[in-house]
Amino acid sequence: MLILGLSGGLGHDSAACLVHDGVLVAYAEEERFCRKKHAYGEPPVLSLLNCLSQAGVAFEDVDLIALSWDPQKAEELGILEKFKKHPVLSGKKMPTIISVSHHLCHAASAYYLSGFDDAVILVMDGQGDDISTTVAYGKNEHIEVKQEYGISQSLGFFYSIVSDYLQLGASGEGKLMGLASYGESVYDFSVRLTVDGYEIPIGEPDSSLGLEDKYNKLTRIWMKEMYRKFGDPPKRIYSNNTLYGGLNYTVEYSKKHKDIAASAQQALEDTIVHLCQQTIRQGNSKNLVIGGGVALNCTTNGRLERLGIFDEIFVLPATNDAGGCIGAAMIASKERSVLPVKGRLKTPYWGISYDDNHISEVLNKLGLKYNYSSDICRQTAELIDRGKVIGWFQGAAEMGPRALGNRSITASPASYDSYVKVNQKIKFRESWRPLAPSIMDEHADWLVEEAQYSPYMLKAYTVKEERRQAVPAIVHVDGSTRPQTVRSEVNPVWHQLIAEHYKLSGIPLIMNTSLNTRGEPVCETPCDAIKTFYTSAMDALAVGNFLIEKNEGI
View 1 (cartoon, rainbow, N blue to C red):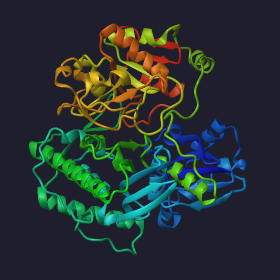
View 2 (cartoon, one colour):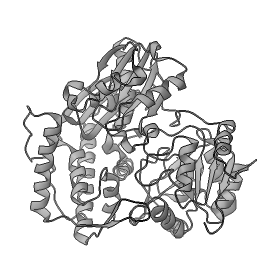
View 3 (cartoon, rainbow, N blue to C red):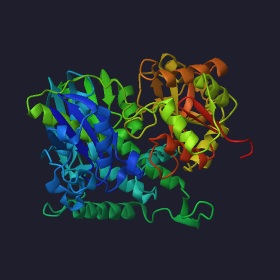
View 4 (tube, helix red, strand yellow):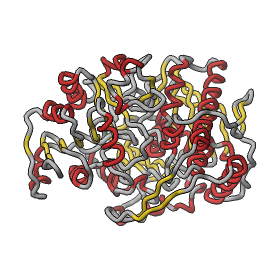
């Protein structure tokens, strides 16, 4: 049975996957192809076409479509109708379409790809189908929901509203996590820990309201609470960007604002830790899988791991809404008596891999000067060791929002100047946001305390005191970092690049951030990489086995 899973029914992070007889065979995210970050309002059509190409099948071969949302609860967004009416699908007969509850999709994608026989499952996001937090238990391919929290109890909305109040911009939750390290947790928020879990006593939106109206009302309630407690938010100072076009803005953060961020992070962590401790007391499992957008909070994930209350913790790299399509397809498969083939996700790299013939065709068509490298890892490592910032494009793209070595910008971790150049001159990020490393897994304990295998850059660790001066570009103000630990059997080329850098510098890691500039999705194609390279301050681009370098002084 071939099942097409679709994400994006809540208006963002649309994606598609194919599950064949219970096995994930293709996955793609719409933003990488439509080139709109988070693919707001875009149906997962281009990602569908990519999945069909990966699997070598036609749309007519699909037996069933599984949605990771309930169209009746998100109908005003109309993503399903946009999908069915898209010109690409014009005249094609639609298979049967079913919907799977949003949080069950998150739970299933995380559980079935964790490889655990049994696990506690914790799903947290803004909301999906009127649910914001779910505690469940997985055993022998079955998922049993233990606890659900409604939209007014949303930890995701709570964190998002604090981000909005602090003027961190759209999808600013990651920025809030970075800013939190500069403050102290001194403020109390309306998140109460209870014997049964937690409670946010701010009022329940009218159940008769639609999704958008509920969200707007809840936003007003939370924002009113923020103004009451903290007064006016920080001010944005706007300026006209005459060089690149459009508006720029800056925000000056006082100690109070940094303390608000730290207090929100603490409240989020304490609540999640409390929920996890409850499940341990119930004796369900010593394995934990986490799903939903809140699972991108690597500071919380790192704290959970350091607590040691679970034997192992798994977070899917596509833990945001994009990954929900996988859970939808697997639940649909199970309901049709084709059990999902459970096993640990072997690779986060999905999609088209471009060989040297494809890449050279693009380079020649564009009339670019380039060199073929017989040892692209060694040559790139030499550039990194000379202080250059390199765009790195290899193989198939990563799933999820984190750069994992196939669509990366990399530089030396030993130079703080590298951090400044990447953060402020290439990515145009706030000066207080951290950058992360990729490190050879066999040398992870060189860098961090209590090193664990962390292949998806989703857990924060404490950098050893004696190493911090050696790698200032990847150490956050609180002494933490969120490493990707790299094994050669998972990504041999990326591992080899780090190994070559290790030979030259004695440092078994390199800086790693995603291959994109501000406001852009991560690059998908060689053309995307070339465009990003030439519109940024990167020094060189390694694309396949080809190396493009800018002239000195440019």
